[in-house]
Amino acid sequence: MKTPILAIGACALLLSACGATSSKSVETQKQTALWHVCIIENANAGLPQWSHNLAASLKKHSISSTIIRNPQTPELQSESCRFTLRYNVITPNGLPNTLRRASIRIVESTEQGRTTVGTLNFKLRGQHRQYIQNPNLQAQTDALVDELLASRNKQKENRP
Image (cartoon, rainbow, N blue to C red; front, side, top):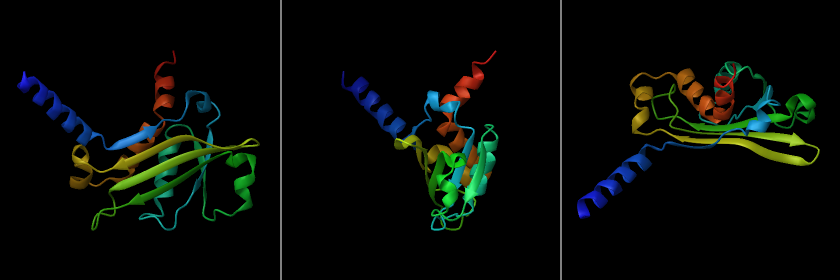
């Protein structure tokens, strides 16, 4: 009796250790409106230029983007910046092409206020060792954006 309980507990522990990301995918009803995102560049992040990797990943999902370097710019108030993306990243020492931690948040601004429509928090763990052995920042970014837009991916798969 104790053996199955211990085995189940060990499996749960191993699975929780593998859960490197927590996310709230962009809601299905927001998918049709999400065709353009303003990426607010984070000059204080471990990789401020990561905004360009994010733009390339979004483009693969048919989402255009504008990179905003100054978060106080009036452009953020325009209709073209209805959706904004903010991020923060930390890279491991000596591995500038690998993300150790990342957080992404997409916010929709409307007349009623601002609403978070998608978030993702990533922490490099054991199952992502390929990014340490063979650093590829764009591939890692693509995987994170794929997860953030998971419901969008499912909609594309269900199209005839």
